[in-house]
Amino acid sequence: MKLLEGKTAIVTGASRGIGRGIALMFAQQGANVAFTYLSSVEKGQALEQELTAFGVKAKGYRSDAADFAAADKLVTDVVADFGTVDILVNNAGITRDNLLMRMNEQQWDEVINANLKSVFNLTKAVQKPMLKQRKGSIINMSSVVGVKGNAGQANYAASKAGIIGFSKSVALELGSRNIRCNVIAPGFIETEMTGALDQKVVEQWREGIPLKRGGTPEDIASATVFLASDMSGYITGQVLNVCGGMLT
Ligand code: NAP
Image 1 (spheres, rainbow, N blue to C red):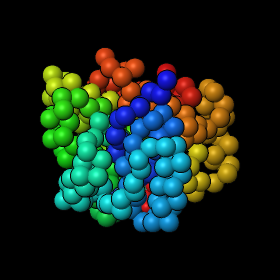
Image 2 (image 1 turned 90 degrees about the vertical axis):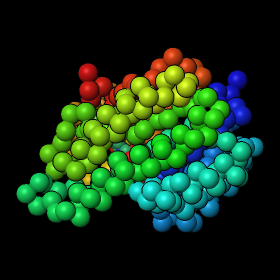
Image 3 (image 1 turned 90 degrees about the horizontal axis):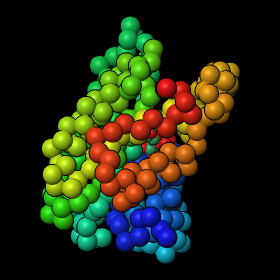
Image 4 (image 1 turned 120 degrees about the vertical axis):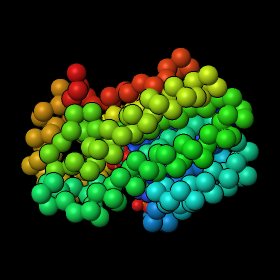
């Protein structure tokens, strides 16, 4: 049985890393997938082909999740192209790391807009079609850093903690309409975002994780499929830490 058969999903930031892993597993599980990216046009086109090979409808959209009007237009376009939206995964995110002492206003604003405002933008836009059909599952990508903080990432941690408060509130507001909203807090997942780190630092990270390895995009995708599917039909307003035991 395919867990997402016949459902339509929007996945933001799917040209690489975790988002790409989610889009692929969604298609494998029978979902039609609308996905976005910011600048990776070629990677987006290649992913569209890969997803279609699973026998589902798939389309990539170049759309800035941090832009309110663009997010609204994206959802209008997806509903026109696919007919509906059942699942939203707010995955797009960036880092602009620096110690607070050196962090400038631009680094703060860029991260808050790309990571937190984007979640507001897209969630607000999918509200209408989801309310109309009286069902929906929204999954927001936070981070263990949003739960426990991290030196050098005050902007990123604030954006990811903000996602948790936002999601719990949305779960309370929309629960009576059968719209669920949950959060995934990934630990150390090995993607381009973490690829920029020093190899020595990466080794230290792996050693400190109870399961003794970094996570993969597939580890996060599996949890996302669960929260997107009817298997999690009685779960809303929760934070699922997918972190190899980093948070206990
Ligand atoms: P990544 O490899 O850097 O990929 C980020 C994706 O987001 C790319 O597809 C990028 O598109 C897209 N994107 C960035 N800004 C965007 C915007 N304004 N509008 C639309 N798309 C945008 O990152 P990742 O490691 O897969 O991380 C995915 C999510 O998981 C992020 O929210 C991140 O904070 C979170 N997370 C990651 C880790 C980790 O260890 N990797 C841990 C905890 C949480 P382009 O290719 O076009 O730039």
